[in-house]
Image (cartoon, rainbow, N blue to C red; front, side, top):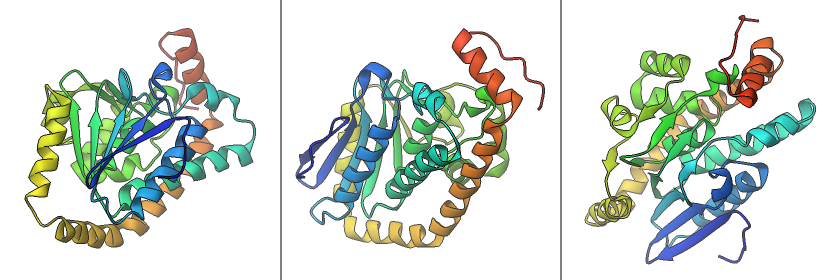
Length: 260
């Protein structure tokens, strides 16, 4: 790859590329730079016919803590909001539609948008100490990054609604029990390598072709959900409950939601 990134590291091993989110000091919070660079790197890999498998992982103590709250608070006006949401939607679409087999190797936290990104992968492995949360509800928002799409795809509408409404933090075993993730690992590197080896015993091109068929069937639905999430997110950002949720988060207290 020709590009040099500030927040993304790409490594190659034969037909496998590992893409690492590299903002460890912020628990790999997804700011506009990381979102843009991730999208660029993944699009370039999508066009690389030599690559068959892509692994997504986070540097340091987390996969990704979600959207960068500090940057969110600095967004001013509708145009800026919709611009960043367009970038998020493009990234999630790129991950989901990659003509590669993809693994999300989740260490530490995967929360909010970070969890949406992980669930866009074909196979999700979580370290036994990982924590997962679709926790937008805590700040009066709805999931974005295709969170509705990916949860509904994995566990069905009714379970997805309950999970979103609760905003509960799940440990790896809880997430595996309700089939949000595919595997719990004590040794993440070994688990990833074992899955890669298992895939390599099969005709990967045929597997990728099956993925392309499902992607073609579902891509319009994902696009629709991303648009609905964007509009809903903007609407919720105007509410008292969102403002109260952010204040409570900053002040490290329980929010007092009023349903308005």
